[in-house]
Length: 204
Ligand SMILES: Nc1ncnc2c1ncn2[C@@H]1O[C@H](COP(=O)(O)OP(=O)(O)O)[C@@H](O)[C@H]1O
Ligand SMILES: [Mg+2]
Image (cartoon, rainbow, N blue to C red):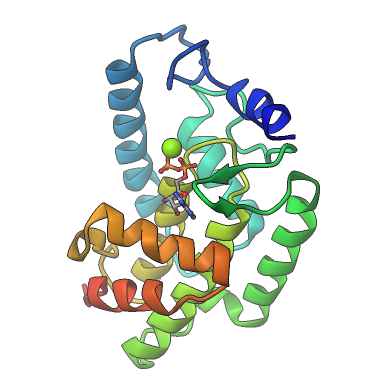
């Protein structure tokens, strides 16, 4: 079974490489990662500029972040994966259930008005909600790649909407961040992520 998943997941990459097959025919790892960095930086500017009181942080918005940020580079941008995936010991949502699970997460988020009412509520409450939904999306891991970055972009826009700066994740090491992500995926526990987000939230 493992080999089946492996061949399916790795099919987005060039052979023996961490470079995803891409529309520009780029083969160099450094080159593709630099380009991804630039595209993400541009996306932050674009979505920052577009953000206004009518912005709705729904599933379409989330998918559009992925599609519009990386669509010039990857044809799977904005497309949910249909294969199973894991990292380390963590198994993400099964490919077959991504659509329905995503809809469930976003309909829950809709009931909370997409977390658009936290400007004058406590930071603790906001961090708790952000962490809960962030953990849900981490466990969903809906795209073939670039989930971490797009999920952070999504919650950064929600933070901005509520009068905060982008969430600073540099208060922890990458290993500590992954540890918090593991708690999300394996134990559905968002406590560690909540602490990270709380410490990384500052009013603009
Ligand atoms: N061992 C793990 N257990 C659970 N989640 C993990 C693990 N490793 C990575 N992750 C999650 O997956 C994300 C990385 O996914 P990926 O699609 O490669 O996105 P990106 O390339 O933007 O970092 C991390 O940010 C984290 O949320
Ligand atoms: Mg990655």
